[in-house]
Length: 282
Image (tube, rainbow, N blue to C red; front, side):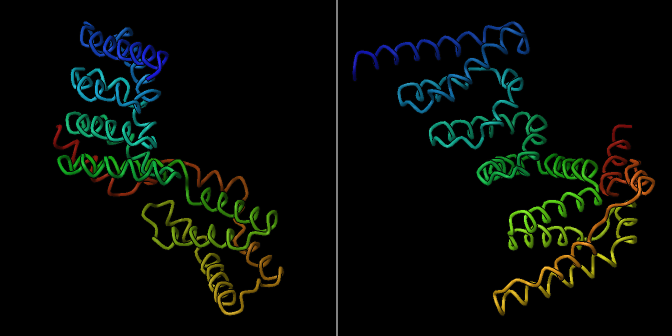
């Protein structure tokens, strides 16, 4: 080892040991000084935690920090669950698993959000952690996943989902000439709609546009069959017909009625869970 490397290693060891020993001395676990030290420790960990000489210190030292202190930096930890370095990832997974078993309510919601990440590595890391927490806290995990799903549905109504999907599909076809990309977006959109209506607003949407969307799905399936047989694109006129049939832009008055939020816009299973919890707390 070169002299410079030995000096860097010595400084890193002192820094890690200093933070690990200083954090437990904090009088209040959520004080500004403790939080600042925790953030500095995390920053060093994810920057130099792949070094064997400091990884050993972290492995034995992180458990010295009170679990309550880790609660203040859960967002920073969850943000890095897809870290690529194996040494850092193993230690992080172990820490979050133990923290999740100790304080499941602090991790289940941010993990339920990470489960819907477009990044595969992030989704897989979140799924692994959630399964470990679920083994001991099945009810909390189920409720967190339900609430997370419904919050997304409330923020992204069916008509908004269709608008966004159609705009993206149109961009892929007319802008990029990407037929397969367009089909992937539209088929995914239709599969979501085929799951049926679970709220009053979804039922209203299905009643108003279900027939046209069903006809559009027929066109898509014919298109796919023709592509599979001949490997050729349909004439642009057919795509134009499909696009115009799916185009769901409405007058402001209609859109306003769809944008009004009430408890009827929430899945009945959420209301049942809420009612049951209220009765238990009452």
